[in-house]
Image (cartoon, rainbow, N blue to C red):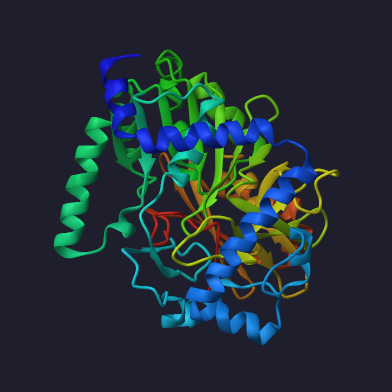
Length: 436
């Protein structure tokens, strides 16, 4: 271990100790009945705290005639689900009676409904989840990390924004990190990002899925150089990847892809396993209970099992996941993140399809870096970023592929427009589908 790693380990001792405790817990408690016995005990403590100190949950319990404790976490499956809109409208009833929060966070608004909520400082739980999830891919403290990131909306405004930006830069330097904005996915921006990445020679690359994909596509001519950098793994988050995209990234960097599944309000909920690629849930901090939607899609309902300033109980996080046949009730592992119901395009004739289908069709043109679907009445507008001007033949190819993949589009207008930039959320993410 290098001196820098020892210093970082000392500075992060609380996180390190928390990681060791949790890693030991995962090894000792492995049977489903023992896991759920643990979850039940922890949930009852979280629930009692929520009802005693958070007016929203006190009223929610009385309104829905809910018990003060449960005998098993299976009992929660008859409880109502809390939508994000309910928390948005809760206002001051989310403030604890015992005192105000120490800070605030806001979701990136990828569902069109950003949520602002109070927070307490991380007690090491969120950070330890990241350490544990990445350790399977060889992560160690002090590794050189290159970030294609975009959470500037969390920095506030004015002087506070300036101070937080400076503090972030200092922390990045101490932690051997180089951070590049993921807001601009254009070819010039992604070429510059790759320039900095190659000069920095990171051991780990972390970024928004769309940004990492765009970076690889805009720098195909640098594949040979990128494969010699010695990258240990590439961590992608803030959106699922297709199998083709995963394979492209792994080939470009000669390194495996690690997927993090989480959200601003829920924190990290699961990481993929290196061998199987399946998502392994942090069952000690999150209870996942799913509701069938359609086909093999299940809506993810989350209960946080840690004491947070704003508890989340039976919360609809807005994602659909694909489950394994033997993990269809309260999954501790699941196959993949499918996406959000808000990413489903519904046409006037009643047919529907995931917006990712359009993305797969657009990829038939190798020069396209990223895309976004705008639904405007009976018109489907496909906005794209490309390396160079698209030809009419390439536009026709995209439209033809879309109509082949979704026959219902034969009766709809499809327009392909090349843009200088795609629309983003407050958090810098590129929504797959936008409705006008």
